[in-house]
Amino acid sequence: MHSFTEENYLKAIYKLQEANGEMVATSEVAKILAVNAASVTDMVKKMAQKKLIIYQKMKGVKLSEKGKQVAIGIIRNHRLWEVFLVDKLGFRWDEVHELAEQLEHIQSETLISKLDAYLGHPKTDPHGDPIPDANGVFAKSKSVLLSSMDAGGHGKFTGVSDHTPAFLSYLDKIGLSLGDTIKVMQVEEFDKSYTLQLKTKKEITVSFKVANGLLISA
Amino acid sequence: MHSFTEENYLKAIYKLQEANGEMVATSEVAKILAVNAASVTDMVKKMAQKKLIIYQKMKGVKLSEKGKQVAIGIIRNHRLWEVFLVDKLGFRWDEVHELAEQLEHIQSETLISKLDAYLGHPKTDPHGDPIPDANGVFAKSKSVLLSSMDAGGHGKFTGVSDHTPAFLSYLDKIGLSLGDTIKVMQVEEFDKSYTLQLKTKKEITVSFKVANGLLISA
DNA sequence: TTTATTATTTAGGTTAGTCTAAATATTATT
DNA sequence: AATAATATTTAGACTAACCTAAATAATAAA
Ligand SMILES: [Mn+2]
Ligand SMILES: [Mn+2]
Ligand SMILES: [Mn+2]
Ligand SMILES: [Mn+2]
Image (cartoon, rainbow over the protein chains, first blue to last red):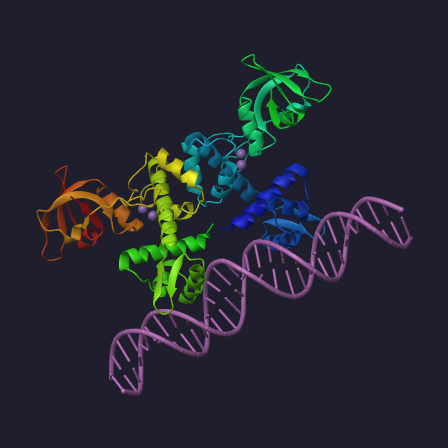
């Protein structure tokens, strides 16, 4: 149907427009896909002709409704495969992203629907990111960055805003896992480091950089 | 590492040279891959430069040792994914080939090794075809076509030589499954049809065309 | 052994996706 | 408002993988 390249453009534009609003600059897309800005201009013109995106010269691009649905489909594939890799094959959460980048492009409605059922219709992937349903609908979740919380606040660690393997394996190392209940004991004035109490009563202190990568839900 | 296209060329050449011996004609490759013979000549020249195959103008091609290992690797991937699709996701054996054609190109040693372990290190795929081990070694099996057997012969149905969905689903329809024990009761002189007795004592008659698609082991 | 048929290669061309360098437009600075 | 800096697009080229048509080689038939 669509080439891997087209799908990757759609995904990149989707992520940018979710994060930074409406129109996305071609240079932003270029940065994500690690290609030259001139290549993006070229490519988006072709994709605009296919009605996958709307392109306005010198203003940027945004997804058409069709393009958006395709993008969400790829994200659904990606996250379901990540669940498979972690839950069934025993990969760690910091190892699965690159593999899912390949698997997300496998074309088959029935495969994805059977995989979804096999995994027990998971609502989130191994990083806490929501998995859209077959109709492209996300279950909205309202979480906040730990770095925005004050002493006394509490909640459950349900996602990360930093998806780098380095960050994820660091969380493993300090024994912080998705689903853990945490309470903010202290926010250090000096360096904005956070001291947390886990359900096990154990206390850990994390830097601001870490606090800024953790998503907490009520 | 190698493009999907290169991998498909290697697989096609591998299969042809297994079936028809040493040198493979470019036109044979063209037929399998559904491309023009001129395109094959073009492509094999490039692949010869990469030392994946040996090409002799006007004589044909054969795989280099390196090319052979790559080809066997793809076949291993293909068959393991087929097992996954049937055993874990519940696909029928006549539905999985095209999907495996996509999945076989996913690049990751660890993925395949984990998948292999997850599936219990299967020795054969859903069609009875042997799965090479991680070193590219096939477990040799010596089976014969039912169509070469005489009345009184017996054995176990362990594979198919015809992999078409039409044939496979026909076998489902007449209730013949991989692993079934069969005994040749009669070979009809007139049309070479075979009457078989199954372990359940039930007798079925199959045409020569069907007998020619079934592999029987002692 | 010529001649016809068939297989294979060469030549020239196309499309997708990329690049670099140059041109143009936008935004920021003086 | 003029100039400098930055972003974006255009122009021209490249590679991978394909195609068609023409040329050549191998094989089969007369
Ligand atoms: Mn991911
Ligand atoms: Mn994820
Ligand atoms: Mn197959
Ligand atoms: Mn098979």
